[in-house]
Length: 191
Image (cartoon, rainbow, N blue to C red):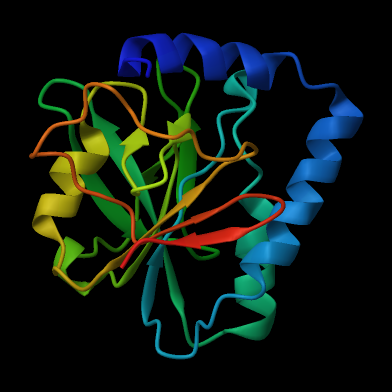
């Protein structure tokens, strides 16, 4: 078993070592798996915008898919506050204005704010996850704080290019587990 710190290093490196063609294929296959998810009851879907330099999964294809086939779903994106590791959430529409923050992350700078309690489906960035639904993020706790503000029944769906590991060594009781994880090859359910 490896610690979160070890897994962060390992999976950041694994993503960086993917060729452009491999990454494009994995993103296409991730979208195909995502399209198998039943979204009929979803009202507000939070989606992260990928950080290209970290080779995160392409969520723009998911955004386009939802906009085209589920126009009743309100898409939501967040802005991170690095002073207290909180997030503010905004409706993603044609009026949303974006800027890159000091870390090069594209974020909304204005728009209609959304309460976390309304968000019932969260697409979660991660570096790794285990067979029990625990995840390894970037280590700042933004999403764990966000999850604590959401309704308990909100779906937390991780996206990963890679299969799960057996078990994260240093997981703890305060970690909020995923309800699902999607890889290019499989959908894992944890509840």
